[in-house]
Length: 411
Image (cartoon, rainbow, N blue to C red):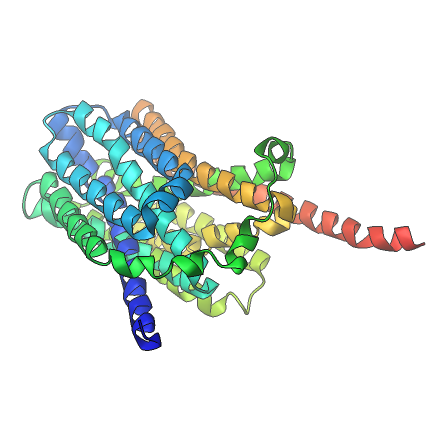
């Protein structure tokens, strides 16, 4: 294969990777808008959402954990083709579900597919391309999760069926799986790049998890990701229900509000790369968390509908840089030999937080009122700010001590 053909094939795979990350975001935004209809049709309580989140998160964590073995056996292209097909079949299975428990069981397979797509694409891009492309890749996820509430809003309000929303996205996933299958020979051309010495350096440290577990700052990172992802997913999952069932906002308007949350989240992700080099990471993180708190206060206050709109959008825009910022700051929180294990733990924390916290908020809302959602979110962002500030201060102290140690030894 000529150099030009290799470059063209790589460009084609990059385009497929971006489309795949858009597809990864599509299912995640459906449930928030479709949940009131699903709950009504199956006659289940408000907090039943936690059951589906639990099974899907279990599948996601399992697939992420087995990512290395899957790729070594089937290759990146094979994993992506199979996981997209599994996700598509599961979403169509949602639309065919005759009862709630069948849908809950299918959540496990939805999580397996999503986890394999996420981990597989991240592995491929990290092994073959520069860091900037990774940022854009994650931003493309926001495109999918922005359009999915609009798809479900159209299905529920115009087509009068939440099931059609899942069918639309499911068919898209299956078409993408076919594209991955057809492109399998192209993915195999990247094998040498994945096996290069540069990429092996990323796994040079063989620190045991038992040793990593003993590091308090590793657990602080775990807590940061647990809280952040829980807050991010909670607003996306419960905003539509809060606005329609508690505040009497028209379903179409509420769907647009939910879409604006993810739309501004996506805009924030794309634009983050333009100003991250001009602002220190810690400064950016403080601004983002404080702006998110302001947005939640506006949603909580809610004197008029437009304030809720601005508040939801502001939170989406503000939180966009937080996840990659926390990930980039891992090496500042822990020593290099613990970084690889810490990142794995952080991804697990993100998965657990995205399931546990929205479920707990749902239980609280059921027992009290949907209006507890904004104060719960404000509490989460307050804790996030406090923990991040603590890790930043102690991190600077440890770095100062490390720099002073050589001087003391020489004396």
